Image (cartoon, rainbow, N blue to C red):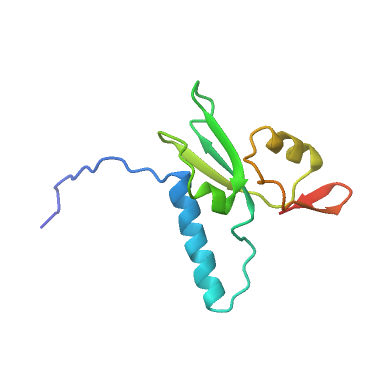
Length: 114
């Protein structure tokens, strides 16, 4: 029936807040099934919007904090951090939300993890 008909839908973009919320729902569901999770609500993340534009936004916060953030218009990216070099931690501090970096622990002399 639909063959040959072109249907165009308006573009829809996922926000950092929506992505963080979905990840937290997955974490909670896996915990309820007794699974071990590698990412938690306290994992350090970076929310980026319109990178390279005049109105770019970079927000460094925990996954739980990013659920309530509003980065404005699209396009958005969510970066979930793993092991961090001390230089990366210093750069993240420039845009960090209050208490975002408090859960970082040093693994060895040159590696942090959240």
